Image 1 (cartoon, rainbow, N blue to C red):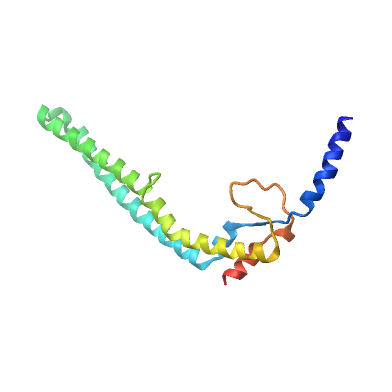
Image 2 (spheres, rainbow, N blue to C red):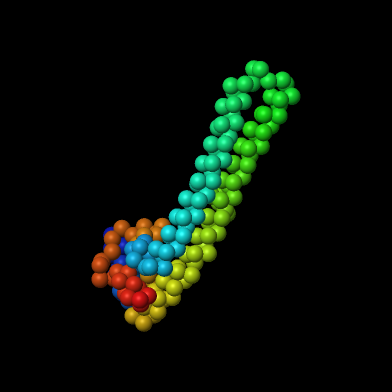
Length: 167
């Protein structure tokens, strides 16, 4: 009896889903082939390299000061030792602040990604939206996103159409 109910439910629900047209794209593939996205990624990579170089410089400075402090701490006066320790703590705090400012959750890297990538993502979305409306798609998923797509028939892949629309 239970199987009959399930089969009946599937029989009545299937026509509803049969009319739905679903497609998908691979946004990672689109971003890799889009010149603007490649330029934006290069700009971001250059900024990250600059910031990492500055961070390495600060960390190297801290290491040198710490090594000098560690080497000489036994012959320092209490006042000099306290000054050097404060200097090390201040520099360590500066390093942590710099790291947070550049690479933190709402740091400059996040802001620059938004600044550089948002217009490109909007352009992709607008092209996708036009294709989806023109061709009657009800849903379009991103294969490279967080939505798990376990199977996709290649005939519903809209990635190339979106790339063509962007050219």
